[in-house]
Structure formats: structure tokens, C-alpha cells
Image: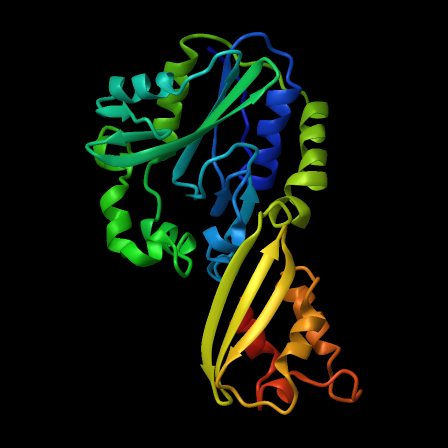
Length: 324
């Protein structure tokens, strides 16, 4: 099978590379490429990032967030995870499974777009049809940091929050445990590349094409509109205890915009919190956007009172921590 090379570890560029190759790369035959991402969370095309991803953890740990063109669930990538992409008129993850078996790994396809080994997941994959072509891309966890994986995908009320990190570890596995003959992921990648190519040559990917991929990344895959703005409607509840009392924020979102906000609790405040909620409704559900809006309530203008006027003694950073 012929192949492309993609040395990038930028998830926004790599999501762009996938879409470009599916829709624009001129090949009538099935081709593949292996690639990696820096620490990142990749959500499915139809997912809501606010309910699937621990955004605060990602920000604190410099983990990038990206959205792919295929469906399915959120996945965590780091440089010890190897990704594969196959594109053609009819494609299947079967070549990946056969290659793993040839290396001594008892890999099996499941009915839920996963590859399992001994009852534990080592790979998830997703599919998209475009005209007469298909793309399948997926993960191969070699030595992924499972603690980081669990925290990045752990949000209040999620399955991970309920079942905990120990449960996550019981359901997933790293291929390193099954491949003692390889000293590194680089060695495994080289072996898989050789097996899948089976002597076929690399396909050309000129600098002009790479520039087109970068332009697509800049215009689409790295933008707030694509990553956050594609999030479908969701309702969230945030709750915390402060000096003024307990505050609950009931948040409604659609495509990344705060469509409704209601505060409840036993907190004290001079002015009705509903007034502040009304001023924030209609804005992007983005920490910086809301910070700028709250900073405008400086307390110098009686028409724009400070946060502390609605919640006794509360600061803008504390309210943002509650909302996010």
C-alpha cells in the first residue's frame, strides 16, 4: 500500500491534513500515513467540548484542544500514541489489526469502532465518507500517560467522573506491554510502516500542498468557531461555596454561546444576580470574553456595578472559576 509522510505533531495541522487528503489529494488507490500529536484532546465532529473535556485541566497543563472531521468520542493523544489514517474508496482498519497480530499482539476488532487486546482497548477509530472516498483514522496507544488521559477527559457528571481513574485503567491498555521486542515507539512505527507499505513507494506531497494544509489549519481547524462553536446545545450546572454563600450557576449553551444563565443559592448580594446574568447572556462561553465583560463592571458607573455588588465580596476571578 502506498503512503504519505506527515512529520507534524500539531493537532490542528494534522486534522487539516486529514481533511485535505480525503477531499483533495489525487489518488485512486488506497493509501495510508502514520502520524503523532503533541499532548492534545481531539473531540468528534458532533461533540460538545464543554461536556466532554476538562477544559481547565487542558489549559493548566498546556494540552491543545482540536476537533476532527469524523464522529465518535473524545480521545487523548500524546507523543507516545501513534495515529494511523487510511483513505480510499473502500477502507478498513483490518490492515492495522493484521499488522499487530503479525507482531504477536492478539488484537481484535469490536463492533464499536475499537481494537481490543485481552479485553482492553488499545485503539479507537472513526470513519467519514466524502463522495466516493472514505477516511478511517485511529489511535494506537503505545505508552500513553493514562493519568493525564483520565484527567483530561474527566468532567463533572461524566462517565469518567463516576467510575474514576482506576476504572479507566482497567478498560484501556498500552501496546508497550505486548511488544517487548521494541525499545521505543519510533521502532514500532518503523516496523508498522514497513509492513503496511509492503514494498510500495511513498506518494509525493509537495511544498505547495503542505502550504494549502497550513492555510486550511489557520482558517478552520485552529479557530474558535470550529473547535468551540460547533458544540451543540448543552445545559451545565456549576456550584461552589464562597464567603457570600453557596452559588449555583445554571448555564445553557449552544454553539459556544451562553444562551441562558441563572444564579441560585443562599448567597448574599446587594443587587439581583439576574441582572448580571442578563448582561452575560448572548456572549461566547469563553473565559477571556466573559472576563472582559465583567471587567467593564468596574463599580465606577452605577449602570455597571462590580461583581461584588451581586455577590458580597466576590471577585471577578472567583466568579470565572465558578462558571468554568
